[in-house]
Length: 328
Image (cartoon, rainbow, N blue to C red; front, side, top):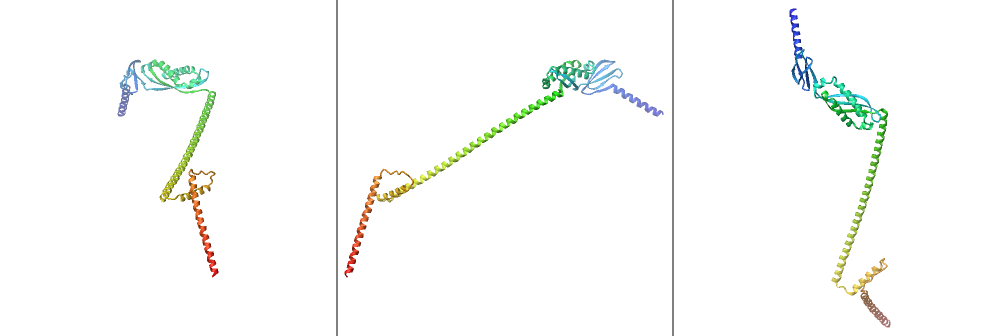
């Protein structure tokens, strides 16, 4: 039994020693600050790390120095144009003086919440519904300035204030939805009309460009045809000129007589007369040509006379031969 009592005694002693040591040595984390009170009076500020506190005489209050959030519950606010809306907000703050935060305000969270609700009613109440719905940044800025100034004596700094929602009554919201729907429909109609206009313009421009390209192609084709005809006529003219030059050279080389030239001239006139032309232009030296023709006709007459005389002589000779045969 004595052994058991001895073991229990040592366990109790160790437990008490652990509790005492725990009360004496306090570890403060980097984002915390400790306020040490001795006999109920503020004594000193304990920094992060290992700190010694005398049990029974001193106690330590830990203050979180990180940025924290307060959620302001929704509340009804009457706007300047007598519309009741529901508004709520979020407050971001950080402690700057832990001593003021602990000793200057009993419940900072509740105090900041009530202060935010009161000033939120004042700020939004000075605005009409449309302005309140579209001026969130203005409300946030004004509310932050008011709360930051009011909470400075509590050892905190308001970092920012964010309005979460601004909800008008259901009937007002339905009317706003109808207006927004009508506006969207109008914009859609305008957009559709602009699209159709643009499409018509593009179609007209495409048709215009197509017609221009067709006209350009036709003009180019006509130009090519004309060039081809031009080159054809030039080639024919050059060929005829070359043929005339060769004929002319052959004629002069053969040293033709005037009679031969006149005959060829008549043959050419015959071909001209067989054509469809209603007018025939004769050369200026027609008289000389006609003179050659007259000489040729006289030549033909002489040849015919000689042939007639020769024929008569042959007939006479034949008659004489017949008479001689009869007499015998």
